[in-house]
Amino acid sequence: MTSKSMRSFAGGLVVAAGLCGAVYFFGQGEATGTSEKLSDDEMKESLASEGYVIHSEKEWEDQIAEAQSVKDKAEAEKEAVKEPTEKIIYRTVLTVSKGSTSIDVGKNLQRAKVIKNANEFSDAVEKKGKANGLRPGTYVVDSAMTTEKIISIIFK
Image 1 (cartoon, rainbow, N blue to C red):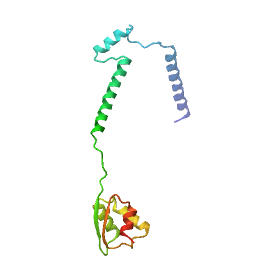
Image 2 (image 1 turned 120 degrees about the vertical axis):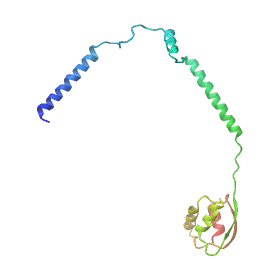
Image 3 (image 1 turned 90 degrees about the vertical axis):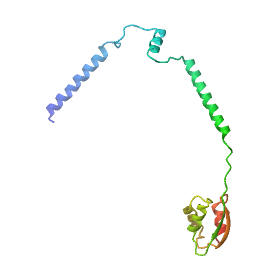
Image 4 (image 1 turned 180 degrees about the horizontal axis):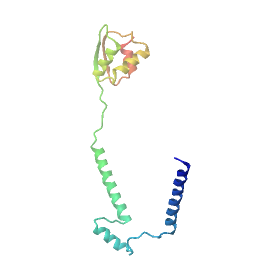
């Protein structure tokens, strides 16, 4: 683009901006359309005939309050129907045979729903350094016990 064409383009922008400004400042002050002024009642009737529902501020607030009270009643009934939840404790008899690993024990405990994740159990055993201290035998454990308690029962 040459400098002459650049100046021409910039000049066009200045002229267009000047024209827009003149129309804005010196044009008509109000929008054209309807020349008649409607009263509040006439506006309500006109809107109602078009299918709109018109409420006063007080009517609107009453409707919102009524809807909120219905919602609150429904929630109260829902909570009243709720049965008290008791924590279910899973108990199992775990038999550890010679040659089992902490991963095997974790999988068995997870299957019995005593722990949630076998890998986390195995990692906890590794952290405590008791991976090689697995004692063969039969143990009774339940889901109310902590992971540390289960590890102390089964591992040396």
